[in-house]
Image (cartoon, rainbow, N blue to C red; front, side, top):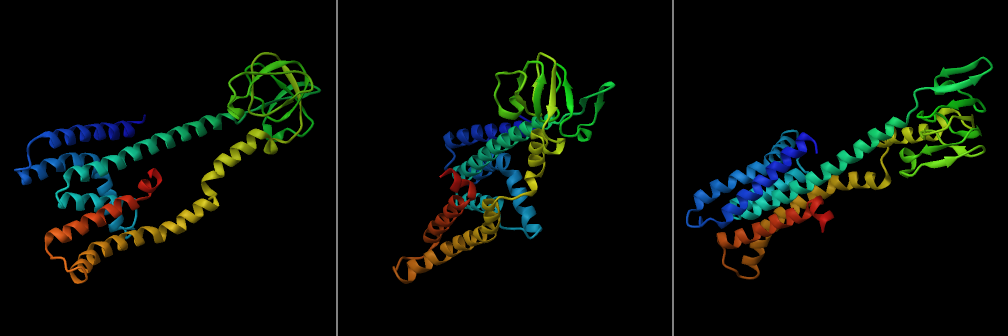
Length: 290
């Protein structure tokens, strides 16, 4: 875990402990004290979400998951549902922590993958062996691969036998035994014997180079599903917010006009609570979990 992830974990654990203690303590006869005490775990676990929500409002980028969480939890606190307000923020932050850990692991794997880029190639010439840049090696050239060195360019073994570590390419931890006539891929590590290979591709067309190109440019290429989600989010979040507002306002009005229910704070708070629930379950994270 990174330092940031550890801090979030400590905040989550502290908020859980405080919420449990406050739920057990007999504080219902002291509503003001109970409210103030519940603000402690609420801000402990959720202050960064609230900050992002208010920052989005200030930058006129209102409708996102931070805004949904802020409105829903603040509304729950105002209605006196303190435990639920803190719990919603807790579950959201737990999800954010798991996501952060998963993304961090993926980034570390990508960083490890970047190590497959070869720094040099041992080119066999009439005068001996010359250390050159892999970009300068032509197809059909003979390369010398010493034990412990990384294969710079795809080729075929023309002399020698050895075992290769191909875990960076295939994920396979067991070494692969090769001998004369076998194909060898760039990015592999020669573990034992000395090899001579004849290159079958130029460096930019080799396996390692193509993998690195895909990894480096992946962030700038959006899949069709990602493009759809980007377009969908522009309409989805505002629609959810306006629907929740309509539910909170029209629900009591319809109940009073058509169902002849008596008005008052009890009726309004009931429908506001339903609108806040709708906001929470409409959050993209909640939809994915469900």
